[in-house]
Length: 59
Image (tube, rainbow, N blue to C red; front, side):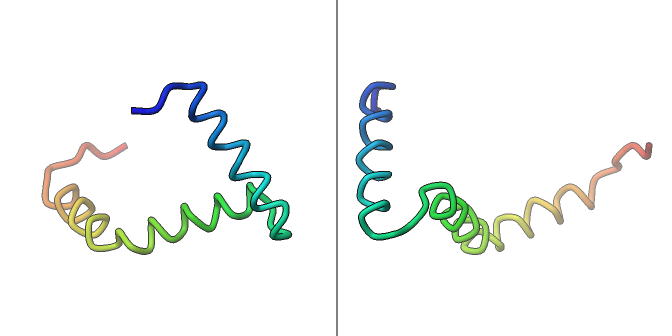
C-alpha cells in the first residue's frame, strides 16, 4: 500500500500530466467516479435489492 507521501506524489504527477493534456484534475477525477459507478451498476442493484428485502425502519 502506498504511503501518504507516495499518494501525494502520484496525485501531483497525475495533475501535471492532465494539465499538459489540457484536462482539469477535478473534472477527470469526477469522470473516473462516474465510470466506476456505471461499471458497478450490477453490484449497486444487488445491494439495493438486499436492502429492499429487509424490514427497514420507516422514518
